[in-house]
Length: 201
Image 1 (cartoon, rainbow, N blue to C red):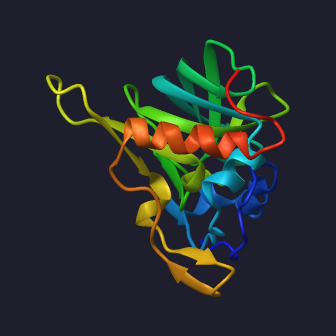
Image 2: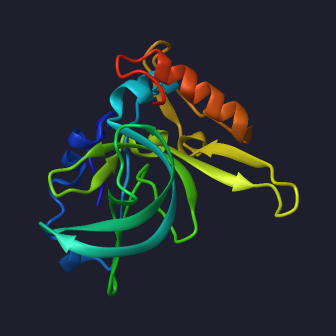
């Protein structure tokens, strides 16, 4: 099943991508929603759009049917707060996942596993969970170089995707790749200082 291309800038609009897949389970045991179009957002834009920004570690994940679609809920433990007032346990919802023999994947929607360390740009959902702002663009993975070095590097999920640049009207793959954690953190705090919400408190 192919979804029509739409731009997924904010979590509130992203649920539109799932329209029309109610019959998914009846026709296939493995499906992918393709042709998602993400519009390139700068770190400043992401910081402005997100209601909450955290560094968190994934504890558990589970998938379930909701209104005819599969959603995956991941519980994260708070590591560091950058914006907003996050709880110690953060429930993040993303479209797609696997329930029984039925699986669904939405391109550009991040996938999490227990143990994942990430900086997440989040927006509150009505059920008390959070959606990821611009999906892959609002997900930054933190990777330790080695247990002994103590060095960490940050890579943005959207770095592996072709993202639409409205300035040039072209698709290009870029984003944050293997940026040292302290440099990424500095850039994020600087981006937050440019928003009306201010920076760290």
